[in-house]
Amino acid sequence: MPIENNFQHDELSRKNPGERLTVREMTPTALPESSSGQDEMAVLGTCISHTGVRVIVLLHGSVMGTDLFGVQRLDELGGLKRGYSRGVAGLDALLALMREDSNGIPLLPGGLKPPLANDEPTKNLLDDQLGDAGNFTNAYLELMKQSLNRDLDHPIQCVRELWSCEHHHLGRAMAAVSMLGRLRDWVEAHKLGQGDRILVQAHGQAGLILALVSNLLCVTANSSRTRLFDLLSNFASQVNRPDIASTIQRVAPLLSNGTFLNGAALDVVTFGMPVRYGWDPSGLSKLLHIVNHRNMRTDGKTWLSKMELPQITMEMPIAWGGDYVQELAVAGSDAVPTTDAAKTANKALWELVEPFDGFERWLECARRAVRIPSEGLGILADYKDSTGSTNVRDHYYGHAAYTRLNAMLFNTTTIVRALYS
Image: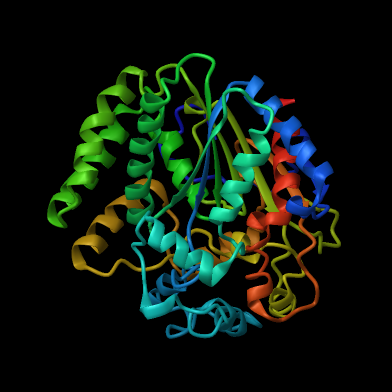
């Protein structure tokens, strides 16, 4: 996407990314039992610190209880009821694998639904229910702190952030505003400036929040940014969210005059993010996308996922081709806001950030099988999580592997080699 992207949707190009793309295979490492692995992490920590990284943010949501694939919107559009799926073999079975009530992903205890709170009780609940499957646990956070900072006089601050998991445009836009507030908090708290860096590692749809943030950071995006902020401020006043309005008032002048990060740089790494919103590279320093991927194609286009029906319904339950959430939670899918006010605001945002609508447009986007966005470096990594198990909780359709404790060394090594070597 271009500089001054202005919230355009990604072009979903099927062209070979060329030198932007690297292919890797993960070797699992149990860090707590591996002294050599801990030594490697300490060396990586020194390298990251020398490049100016002062804060590492682990941003994630929950794969449970959040309509992960966004089938509510597809059903609202009437995909099956209106006969859009007729003549497309296997589509009924695919939608059944995606729906909350039939995809095998448990709900959260007590019927807990988004918006999820970014607090310790909710994080502890997710740790208890999910472990390290698609979830940056407190154990992951503490191990990262200890291993990266072992040899450092000035430790890197490591932070875990849980976003609200409202999988629709309004929810992601509200989360983007909240993330702007948090970024400014870290800049001020740690007195960041020229030469300092914040590194955000975002799992799944949390990456889409950072895509919106990148567009908001563009200094010249005044008109579209003002339009988005006005829309969110109006909605916040209707639903008693003064935090959103106050954050907008706080950050808007800093974004307009280019002083928001006080000269510090923002680096972003996404894990298994669906390709949807376009990125504006002018507001970022470094951008890397990592996707769990195993080549299933016979046409030589190894950089694309395999979206063929009905075959996909046989591959998906064992995560044979990699991350199917990344592949299928594309434009047209989403959870549905629960109130009329939220639906109205969501529709207005929809017109700004994602022109694609309709069941057939979702199918078209999914069939494009794009793994890597048009901006940033890409790594297709085989996380070795397809063991033949049909127990969804073993892999969550290929979306769980990135946050496993045994993937931390691989992730960190990959990030350093791609961005900081």
